[in-house]
Amino acid sequence: MNNEDILFGNIIFLKDKYKDKIHSCKKDINDLVDFIKTKFNIVENIQLDKIYQKDVELTKINSLHSWNNLKNKYKFEDLDVIGFEIVKDDKSEIYYKSHLSDLIIPNSNVIVPSRIIVLLESKTEYIYCNNELLNKELMLYQGIDENDILNDTPQLITYLRLLDESENFK
Image (tube, rainbow, N blue to C red):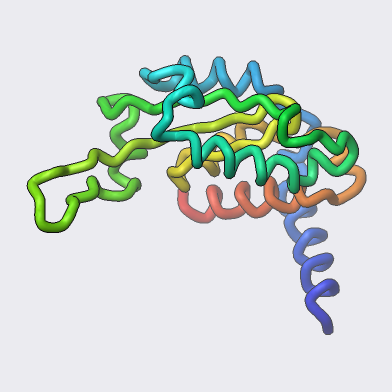
């Protein structure tokens, strides 16, 4: 049995296991933005901040190579990234507990606070979040569409695996 057979068998198993949770429910970027704004206190427009320029560029590069860009073939300059920093408070406590510690610069007293950021590319609907727990939650919230379901796309596979992971940790 090769890796492709194993993957296909796994997809069939997960599709059967979660058949009642597989439906076209894809949210667009505006829905994701509303979800983030409702769930957290945020700092908006961080994509304009110089300290996040590398993250914005990497998000654009990843968007270019994402499954959602195969059909449209957007160029780097076509992409539009929306960015948020999640404020560290009661609403985000569980995410910051699962996040990296503050960075202490060696041989100094400088502490760089750990930050959770979310970058969304509006055309490809690519999600980048530097917090694994929140990234998974955003991807599940974003959902899948009919095309994903009918064609066993990478989005469906990711969605099923995230569903399975979240069910196993409840």
